[in-house]
Image 1: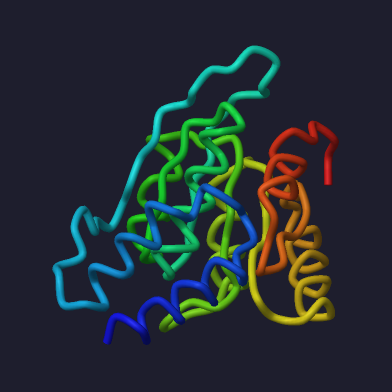
Image 2 (image 1 turned 60 degrees about the vertical axis):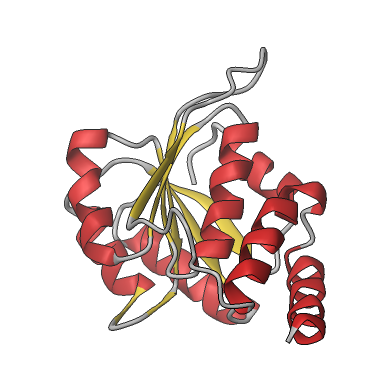
Length: 179
């Protein structure tokens, strides 16, 4: 089992291409694959900003059903000076929109029981945050989702195709222009 989990973790690391950020996640994934409980697995996770000088700051609310990818986005946002929360399910994500007042939203297009497009439609009525559309779908689907978000009157920061690089996350969070 250890050999199989190491191969899976190596593939995961190559897929995400984010360097040293994935190391704690790989250790956690390895423990889980070897039968250990998945610790600290909550519906919403938070990280305070590091507050590096020159970083943009803000609040990123992430909706991704994959906890590993979500954690990497969370840590990327934190490294960029953002406060971040990860929601693994749609309802906690929608519930956090008003009270937490995020400046940015990262929404995965492929979700269990619904689509990212449906979530965008719900967000359009409730939030003015800049939208980052994330997914492993092809470029045509990402572009269509971006056009749909704009047609709903949402401010878009852009798309984040998976696998992604940390630099791409930083660029999307740092760009102050209207989308």
